[in-house]
Length: 251
Ligand SMILES: NC(=O)c1ccc[n+]([C@@H]2O[C@H](COP(=O)([O-])OP(=O)(O)OC[C@H]3O[C@@H](n4cnc5c(N)ncnc54)[C@H](OP(=O)(O)O)[C@@H]3O)[C@@H](O)[C@H]2O)c1
Image (cartoon, rainbow, N blue to C red; front, side, top):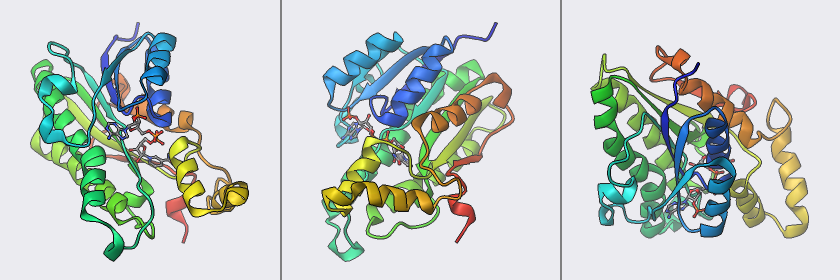
């Protein structure tokens, strides 16, 4: 029988995070998940999957104690960082410093602090799995999106740093690089960039840029996370699993 692990998913109330919560709970793991604001949605998700919600606002990590990140006494074997924002489009010189700071805080700083919070127990146990939800925009820059591009490129560095700092520890760190996923985040970006009537056309145009000729579903991403946190993936660390339908492979 597979070992039951204790799992924490940040951004578990988001579309990708919720797919990860559902998938790992269905596999029999004990799951805690963070949400930012949508209490009713979080309660529904918790009830459906027997998971435990943890509310935390990642806008200002300095204001949060370790006990705000994960409840006191809760230690986990698996950390999946999915919390993120992808703010409205602007060129570099038009991007307010406050937007950059907020994007770094929610996407990067939360992952850094959660890694710090979860590592000691993983190291003591000699077993741990950390997965960072990253984006193709950590590899290639999306236009009008500097704060997100910067946050995602830095997440790549965080993942590698964990690998470098804890050799022989039994703790792995990997990232899943997603292309466009059918999700609320993508819907918001598309809506921002297109007149309402054009949303379907914009989405179809986007799918045509992907060699797989479709957007990813959240479950496509959850399947990659499932492998990386599995017992079988013990020798997989510092890896980027790209779930982009081939997008980064073509010009
Ligand atoms: N969707 C895509 O196409 C795509 C592609 C590549 C990579 N990604 C990455 O995948 C991850 C998940 O994306 P998604 O599509 O699931 O996004 P989403 O549906 O918008 O979910 C974002 C999650 O982050 C939380 N969050 C946002 N602002 C927060 C704040 N200030 N404090 C605390 N939590 C906050 C949200 O919580 P509440 O809703 O409860 O506030 C939610 O759980 C992100 O890191 C994203 O960059 C997404």
